[in-house]
Length: 383
Figure (cartoon, one colour):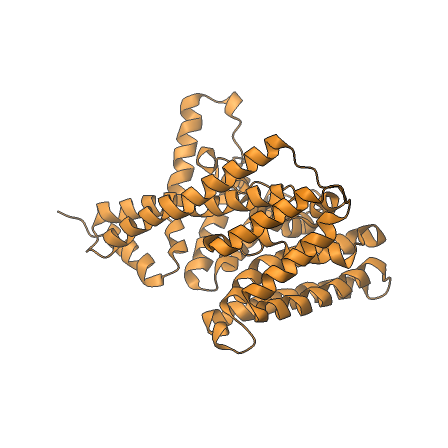
């Protein structure tokens, strides 16, 4: 979202230049970056700034408590997770009406959806590693408030971010060139391709829909969504790496995924990784059976659906993907090794996976009326 504002882009470019000029100072990534993150949020929205100061400090205190406490450890950990989930769920239930409340705005609702996942990751790390997980408040605030990934990810892992924080700022000429290319590519996707594709999508959608138009809209929206999401990720990766942090890739050739299980490891990869790390691995630490794996897959996908939005279309979207992944798990077909199967079989599985995704991805349009109109159009034969 910030990347659509030229002032925000110029501010980030300026911060990168300052970090490069002060690379002789081993703590420039800690203190200068924190000052930048705080000033950026303050200038963007005073409500956003105040909310995140309070939210981050409270969670940091809880994080330290988890690092050192020996009493009520498990109960406190569960309570912290529940409270953070309740906070984002409350805003989800309120929807955009939260923006009409004097204490909230739409940006808080948007950013909390991503940042609560980072907070929970830090609490997990503190709970399982105790004192070894401790971090300074400056580093913790930078982790939560890191501007390049603040509104839409990729979702950073606490351990990886802290490891990068301890490294001095080192960005060579090749990294600068690569980072700039990623930013330009992302901006081209967002400002040119997505804008053009959105106009065509709305033009077709406004017409009476028949089977062929609905199929076209599903495929068109899927490709448009890829350019939209991957474009934002390209920009975030470029700016983040130029600031000295290793931002994980969010899209890893998802169109070449031969199973839905592998698709979710390649599409919005950091989100799928987060749910696997914090739910699947937590409940299946003792060699899960296929049935347990299938059940957890359904739970995870339903949660991912609801994470995108509280509504029946998102619930059924997650349930649909969860059931397909569960079937793949039960049949032992979760992965396909490209080197061990024929090219025709591999491409056939990729095509099947893309078809499964295509018929459901239109729910991301955010409008139930649009989704239902497209699905009804499938049954509207032109003959």
